[in-house]
Image (cartoon, rainbow, N blue to C red):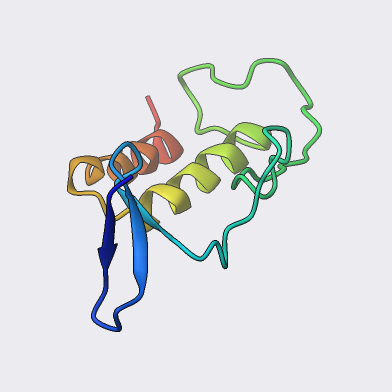
Length: 99
């Protein structure tokens, strides 16, 4: 596996499939279960739906769907990839949708 060094001469493995680096000493690396959703970055959203008609196309989303869209909007705003720059706008449009 290819290794590279930073300015402080610390060695890292380059992972091309992840576009990232892992320290060769293994410090700071944690083995995760595929089912540990919280450590994988998932968030739990709890809400009770009053109706099953969440997206009728006429009113802005409310309750659970609104919480999901707001969470996705916050994540999209934190994303620094240039190719994803229009995503926050799209979620904002869904939250404000009125027809």
